[in-house]
Amino acid sequence: EQMVEVVKASNTEDNLTVLFRELLSEVPDSDKSKKSNARKKRQVLAKEHSSMLIDALFEMLLDVEDSTTLEPTEKGKDFVAIFRVIHVFSEITPLCLLKHIDTLLPYLKTDNGCLPQDESEIAVSLCQILSRVVGE
Image (tube, rainbow, N blue to C red; front, side, top):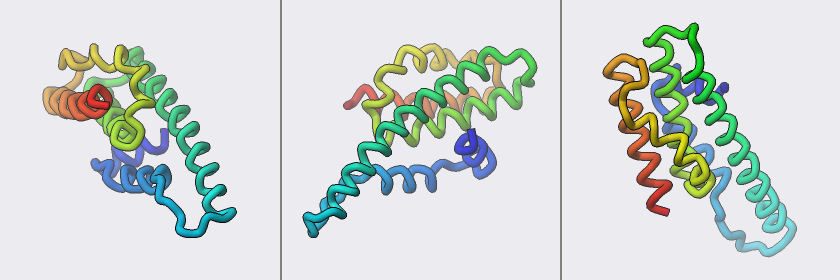
């Protein structure tokens, strides 16, 4: 939830992308010692946590969809921020999103009860996500 709020406030997901790319990168160590094994363990753990974060993002997405108390303006901003964070994960671990493709597709209809500007941002994010996930 905090990642979504940061993206919503900053209106960009670039820093988040860099952070996760560095956390999940598989840079080989020149020193084949405990450092290398520890890095591999951290990477496996980071990928598992990424998968859990992705699942939580989709839960948030469905919660926003089902919310009857949000105004269209707020709902649109929430959708845009969530899709931007999902886009970050599509850049880093696209295969983790594969199981959620069916959840994403209905949002392409651009009739999500949001302002037109938010609808277009949602469509752009979705196209970027799908091109990364389906392309893998």
